[in-house]
Image (spheres, rainbow, N blue to C red):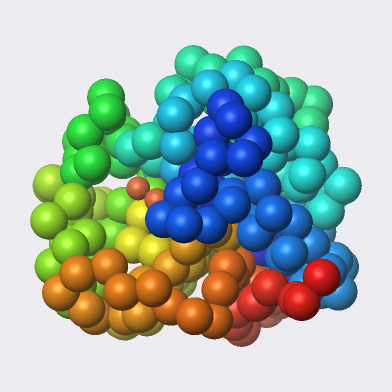
Length: 247
Ligand SMILES: [Fe+2]
Ligand SMILES: [Fe+2]
């Protein structure tokens, strides 16, 4: 069994005391450490908006916190990230940019939906090419895909207006693959649905979340979260959320 934890939307800034939606990004990520380490994860996926301002300092401080949380760590970008700065700091051997990872008995695909500093995302054939590695004829491994933007509306207008263009192309390219679930970030709320036999799951933010399915961002008082996956070699899997401790 492989335990994977998805960390998303940390929104660190150059100034460690900066507030994001009235919350401190550094301290709220730190509040998840006890819950993450209690699961003894084998791997972490950082699924974008790791920085709020794309600064080198923000990536350095996230890396400093999470480096010890799991032996394997990988990342993909979100709309707030600076891909060059992210790649410079979150580099090998400590961090892996994929886009294809063989973790445990599973194959993990990391997809890029971010472009420029626009809030909405997009995919195209080139960005979806890593899915070739999980086509049924290419691999026997059960698979997960991660991407920053939501692959379907989450019924929250404030964030669905920053959705993913070309999501229908994503769904066409997922057909015929071994992908069992698509994990995403960006929406800062809990979401789970199923489409075409594939489960779609958000990881809420590690800094600030909204209650689900609201017209405007409405603070969720239950605080920062991360998502865990237990990936069994026989293709079965479970998932759930980690909440911040009181430390
Ligand atoms: Fe975000
Ligand atoms: Fe985002």
